[in-house]
Image 1 (cartoon, rainbow, N blue to C red):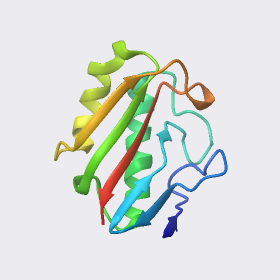
Image 2: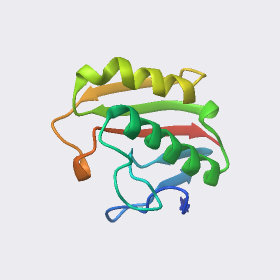
Image 3: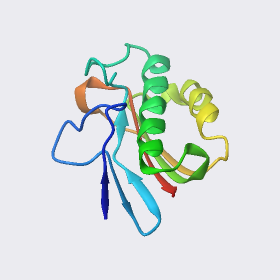
Image 4: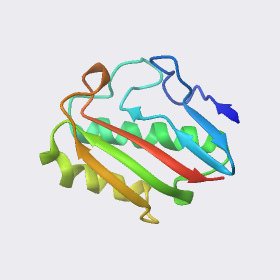
Length: 123
């Protein structure tokens, strides 16, 4: 296993890695919309936070030696399932190959985030 870390995505807010590579796949930890430069949420709207989530995931995937187009599966969490359509618009710009996906509504996320996404991608 190889642990992945990049300064282009927020540092882990707990005892975990941004991602781990094993068996030809990269498994990312969930990314929320934290700006890596400030450590704060990128905004208060689902649009702002979802855009930052995707930028963070892109940075982690690139550090692991892959890209969003190689994603096999995503798991998405929304604190308001009514944000589903808006979230999908942003998500679709990054995950153009349409990987398998689960998207669930949750009560809350770390730091008051509105969305979180984790990825499994081929290297």
